[in-house]
Length: 322
Image (cartoon, rainbow, N blue to C red; front, side):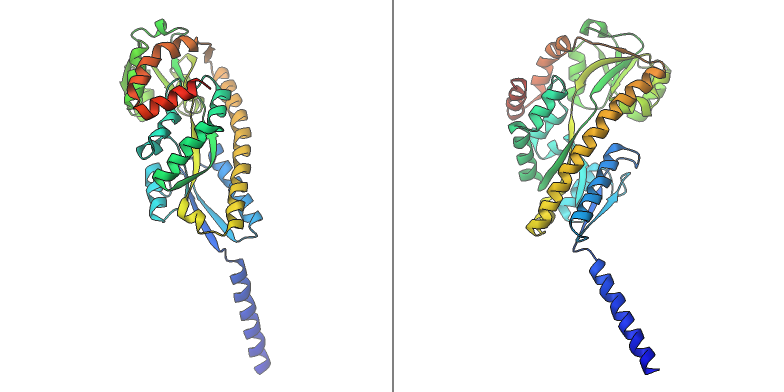
């Protein structure tokens, strides 16, 4: 009986000891808005795998997709309060850091290469520094977003082709002003209402990345994807500065290394997904139209500059001169 008690005690102690060894020193709550099929979520899973493997289990990453921790702004606020740790966010950061507005300014970037040059150079460093200073969030990695294109039932190649076109835009003053300057008739409208409005001809066109054109089935009510590429943007994966600095330096380095791997992984997924989306939309009957983007950019420029403050204008000009 005594022997059995001793054995039980030893086993119990061993189990408790092993559980203690398995417990992570740090837990990162990573909430984002994408669903589990989205490439952003797949990249987050890659980050989790890298962190947990290379920290020998000292850091656990818990991922909460589908806004399980709340909408984008909710999660940012939670990180600042210390109840969440990481998220994926974009131009919403301009609410604190005005330079982050560059993440969604029409015709700021000529093409994907131009965007990469800006984000990975001094301009990107400047934007990230202001984000960290004003929000207490540290950008760990960035993902390119698919450019926004115009869909319609008439082809658009020049700004003149927009004359009088009733176009849905999100409720963003800069977008409204830009499309008015280009000659269209922009109408702010909730995204959930767009398909029906197109179906009923209340509006004649809309603008979004290929991913949303596909997922919202706009191919059923629109014939053309006009390759305006009017907004090229990116988003950041951010972590709370206080949380990051609460970790020893070796674990901080694990986080940075995993973020670099995640960024490379997502970039590969992004390229493949953009190709797949174009092929899918063509197979569903949409025709892709090449657009004179230089003519669009030139005509939009005065309206864009008018909407920016002096700090933003200076950054916009720096981007243009890259």
